[in-house]
Amino acid sequence: MKVCCEKCFNYEPFITYIKKEGIMGNCSFCKSEKVFTIDVQDGFFDSKLFIFAHKFLPHDAGFELERFFTKQIDLLSNSLSPISAKELLFYLFRKSIGKDLLEGTFSVRFEDSIIRTWDNFKEDIKHGNRFGFGIVSELKELLTEIIKKNEMYLEADKLLYRARLGKLENSHGLPYEDDQIMSPPKYLASEGRINPKGIPYLYLTTNEKTAIAEVRPYKGKEISVATVKIKKDIRISSFNNTTFHGETLFKQFQLYSLTNTINMELSKPADEDTKYFNYIPTQYIGELAKYLDFEGIEYRSALEEGKNYCLFNQDKVSWTNSILYRVKQLNIISEPIDMSGTNWRR
Image (cartoon, rainbow, N blue to C red; front, side):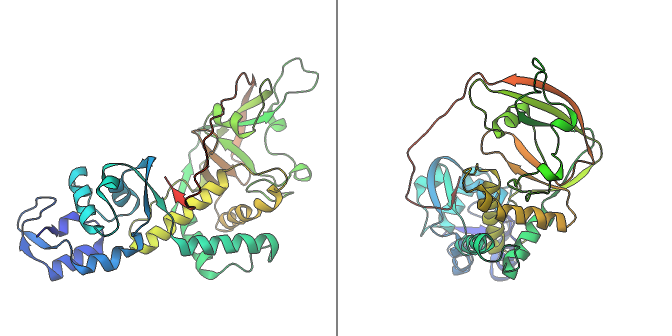
């Protein structure tokens, strides 16, 4: 009989149960001696881990299962070796995970109920209750928790980048500078993925390449790229953080699923003819963060490796300089769409 022990886990309810119901012995996995141990096939584990059953699918571009249950979900102890963690997970999920998955990388299917709730909210705010008054309390509470727990700061003196298609007219090669490339005035501010029409926000990135990609240029197009400097620390919320340790396993999985889903929607390009409606749900996220006294949002770029930032005002940012670029080449890689499932994250 294989036994696990209190030191195999980081999740407090599992540690408490093993100490209460286990017996002193030697662990089959982490090799600890004279610790509380229990049969790894104890029904208690099945009752708590069923929420993850059949949620994993092999994927070459995914990541390791033991990493997910250590870094993303705080189930396993960091002291377990990768080999020991794989073996323990195999026994814990013996009914729903095969050896092939443990040896490779995977994608995870998001928690279904919270994604349905988010999808229903998107439909309602676009075509029912425009200003979000119809949001269910559970979703608003989870969104609020995500925003608050993912607090971070853009520190003073940090350099970020912003791009604008084109250059100064009749300038013989001068880029847009200062106010010409920062937030537009209110009367010119069109709707963006986070800002409503008439409310200008400042969109920035971590590097020039991402800034250029985000304005979606064509080959031969000239682009002005500005370097801006953070003058004072700026309090923002990051949707790039998907770790919510300390909560129940189910709630961690809910928060992980919802954060990833919103991050993807913040970053993905929108079709020009439908962007007005498709931007409304993510504009609600921005307004909620602003209501909670945050000054901006961090999210990933779907077009390059850098990170994106949306600042709700530019009072703590100053323009430094601008450089004019010309796009020499675009690299497009495509693959057939896998329609075997939706809401998978790798």
